[in-house]
Image (cartoon, rainbow, N blue to C red; front, side):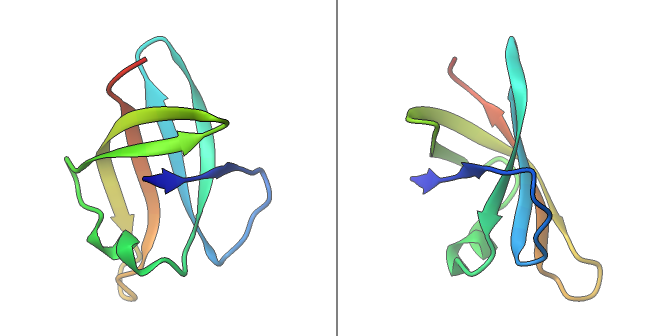
Amino acid sequence: MVIVNKSKIINKDKIKGIIYGKNFKNIKIELDNKRVYYENFKKNLKLNIKFLNNNFKVLIKEVKKHSYLRKIIHIDFFILNE
């Protein structure tokens, strides 16, 4: 399970992301870049996210990496259950 926080503050040490889905207002999130297991995130991976005291089952739709550093810079999460 991944726990995320909503933030509007720009921080270079964070991975940007978005949670979206059908009939769901998009939520911009930031993930702590120090977590090694984020490197295992890949497209079409299903996982549970805890956000604002709610649990969501999500599918990773896209993982964007920096062109030469190969670090993850953005992840798109699609909600499977609402």
